[in-house]
Length: 170
Image (cartoon, one colour):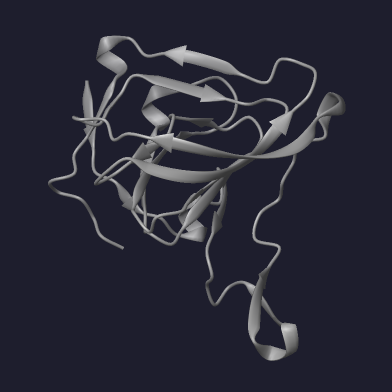
């Protein structure tokens, strides 16, 4: 088993896996509603149309893992999957590149309380990893025909313990 310290979640570091959803200076900003609202525009590519799929919006409620031991990864070959926290709490995004799963390529990011992620189609990721407390997430993903879930259970020596004690803060 190996141990990983979470990296701060930045758009640049996360780019190989998808997009970071946040109201940042990188986003296109459009004044709407007579100037009372700022729209942070087009933050993630929702990619769900393969094999007749369509976008759905759901709420997921997740509990923290204690300890945060990564044993199972999944991917969605037919569509992207977006997670945005609703209660202003941080969470972890554990990912590995698309293609054949490589346990040595696992990276763990610490999302701030006002960041979300959009996993690109085919990117391996762990299920939701909230920190601090049970948390709700707004989820945009794919529904429709076709097999859109692959899971892999890691052998004990390939499992990853997330080391929150030495965590890099971003």
